[in-house]
Structure formats: structure tokens, C-alpha cells
Length: 155
Image 1 (cartoon, rainbow, N blue to C red):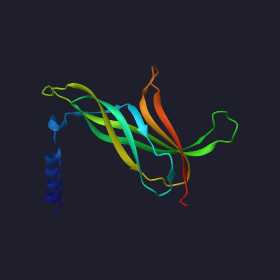
Image 2: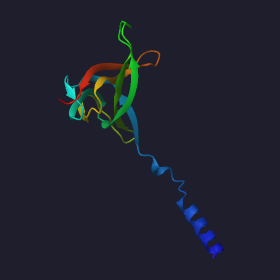
Image 3: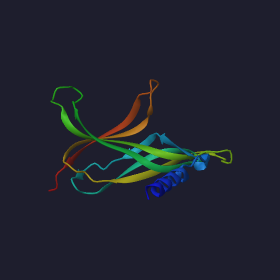
Image 4: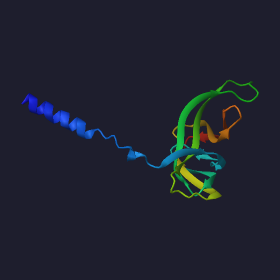
């Protein structure tokens, strides 16, 4: 019985190993810079809001895939450094496109303005900083379009 089980596991293991290189999907993923973003001025906790992002689709081989969305909390000082740091909810957002690749892919340059949006539901009241990725500088440091909002409790 043990030999039969060992033989079964061995055959299953060998059969599940696929060395075929045809798994390549033909797509890569690319972050595209935000051109503009619209965040509602007045927001309340637990309400649903739409945030829109405009970006440029460079070629016909680019297609919207998803949004990078990262939540964090930071203590941010005011510009003058006069007041104590404020605990701020930070939301970092970037557009991700899939890019078709391959010798049979004919891409046309289109540089078309595209808008996408997502729903946002504030979880806590307080200061929020929305950081939309707009590219990198010459040193490779990320640059962001920053929009600050104050979220209030429901009345």
C-alpha cells in the first residue's frame, strides 16, 4: 500500500511539472502618470464618494488594468512647522495599464485622455491626504499630485 501511494505521489508530481514556456501572457504592466484628479470637497464618514482620475493612454496597446491603492497613516507637520504634527490618513493612488506585447501586435500612438474612477468611503474623521502618482523626477523619486481634505463625522 505504501509503495502504491509513493508511486501515485511520484506520478502526480512529475505530471504537474510543466516546463512549457507558452505560459507567457503577452502583457506587461505599466504605471501611467495622473494628469488630473477630482476629489469631493465635503465628505463625511461612512458615506460613498466617487473620485475620478484622468490620465493619457499612450498607445492602442495600452488598456486600463487597475489602480494601485495604498492606505497609510502619517504624522504630517504644517508648512510653517508651527503647530504639532497632525495624524493624517494618506491614500496613495496610481493608474496601472496592461500593455500588449509581441511581434503580432500593431500599436498605434493615440495619446488619448482617459478618465477612470473609484468609490471611496471614509472610515474615520480627520485629515486626509490623497497622493496621485504623476511620475518620477530625474533622481527617480516619485512625484505626486496632492489633494488634502478634512473628513467630518456624520451630523
